[in-house]
Length: 432
Picture 1 (cartoon, rainbow, N blue to C red):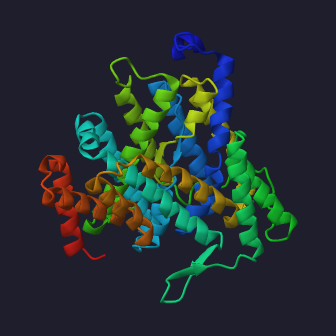
Picture 2 (tube, rainbow, N blue to C red; picture 1 turned 180 degrees about the vertical axis):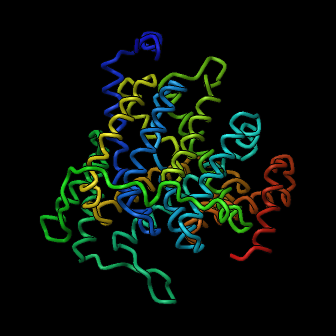
């Protein structure tokens, strides 16, 4: 039955291989069940409810991708987007988390509509590759800044310097540094689940040193009621939230596209014509996942590049996702452990993921000043203005301006020009 439904023989795999690949993928991304509640709880959301929403949304989204699109792609609340949700929208722009969830829902609906039309392909093709790389790298730097602050390595400095070195002698900071070093070393040694092992090891060390308290491991899942269907759609439709919706949609679109291409290439799933089979189903599954996640009470759900770990283990079909989905559901009973994991233990994961995302800068055309300068403006503006939205806006405006003024009109496509003008109007008219 499994062979007929997933086409195991056709893809040159077996049930045993797919199950092993599913466990591998889950171990590489399971850190999200500890990190996501920690980030969103800072927005005022109930940590236990977010933990449940994270597990259920990840399981549901991955199951849809597996059963509907038959791809070995696992999904969960996206890193970077959850940080933008908390630090950018709620703490930075002072919107409620209910409004932020409404914006996530609307972005998911927009993504769903564009997934059944050719508009999605037009949008993806219109954005220059340098800006796509810069957005990913900028989000990585944004995560890194948050991680360094949460770890106590970077602190608010005097007015003259803005930031300064934190107290490196603090036990929490030393534990965070140690966890990060272990994480990098284990990843280099290709230890499965390097990130989650380092998080748990740092947590255990903190408990033994008396820095944090042990809250248990297993228990019945907390209530989902504090976040379930709590989104504020009316508030999300106000003029000032349009940019927020755009960022949620935009980042999800390119994050999902980049992940999809990378995993499909590793799995040998790209056809001889260079196209990815069942592309429409993949995007519809992803957009449905974002909508479901917002209803449950979590930030944007998207495809995870960690799925490539399962592909390297031999995974080729949606059966990998079924295994991952089951493991996410079983994780619901780890709520006490999730509540035990402190911020200094998850900070290394944020920093590590940020470093991984910054790799895109290496692929920029460093011989073309009209490409790498706007890209760097995009990447640098995100952490320095503490806003992913501002980074995208300033980068697009810079890209359009330098292309036009340098006489390279054909490279500034209509979509970029329209977006640049809209961003200029937004900066001029709407309050920051």
